[in-house]
Length: 109
Image (cartoon, rainbow, N blue to C red):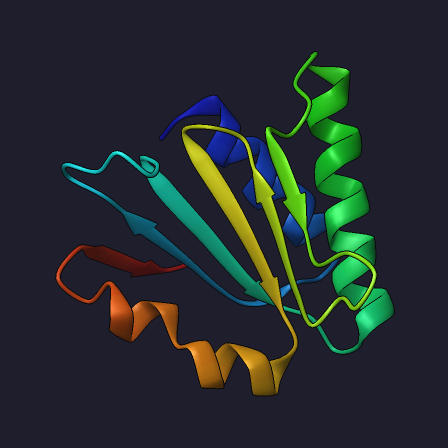
């Protein structure tokens, strides 16, 4: 497990993210892994995003990309080798990244 992925998982756990899943890619130009979690409310997904950014900044890493923070129904934080996807429940069900990438290694945490 990469340090980036470990730090993201810990930040999500610290903010009580739910239904955490990791998708690891064997041969992808997108990322080595996605970390997916569900929040209870927009403020909860924002709190998870804030914690991830805080933890990563402490290590000198800023996100390469950050999308969806204002609406907070799907927040994406791109750290190069690992991308965090923080969803509200309905949006996670709708986009169903686990099904989209089911041919990769999908692990419930």
